[in-house]
Length: 268
Image (cartoon, rainbow, N blue to C red; front, side, top):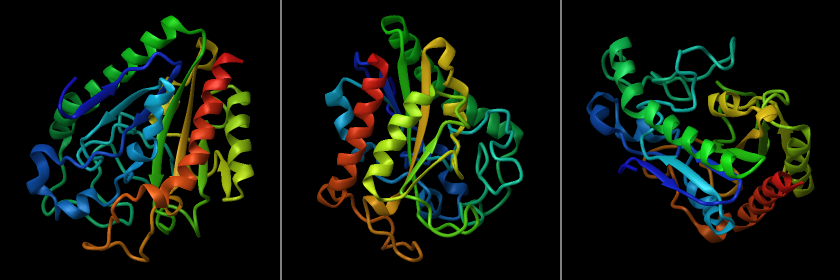
């Protein structure tokens, strides 16, 4: 594809999407308060946590562009996915904690349109192409949108986020059997979970999840504490910790079971 859009093709009826692991600030880095702040809210190391996906024959789609440049999991119209709740925009102007991202004026409509055409549209064109390719070969496929977030962000949610946050937009984006299978594994872990809680699924899940056409989409938002140590207050020098596969192994094992359950659903 390109240096910023990474597609690994497999033949299994499963796609894993990684919309928020990117750190590349592209040609807008100079406008941010700091590169560290612009990268702070990445879904740190999620693509490494799911490194087993290729061995299962899954397709993966990943952008290396930071969500602070353009968020490919937001409604391209700019409409909020969570009306009345704090969130970030298609071209975010603040961090999750509400701190400004830009030293001067935020991107205007023309600049947002440029970023959308440059990075958002090609990402979704690639994702759409992989969905069509696999759907042509299989009656049922699963799109698994992989995310993570810090466990404590008072601006976005109260208290400590459950370890596993399963999003199906109230059951609209996938068959109940898929949501039930994923939720059962989360419950058995004893680590805490919720289905369609604070995170019901972003634009990717809601846009592509069409169970009646054989495309079932589900989002997994992980609390980052499950695979890396979180400081009380992220700061340069302490955030993020380096990825430690030994530290992450217990959670990765549970995620392997979850992804296998997604595959089993497609064959059921």
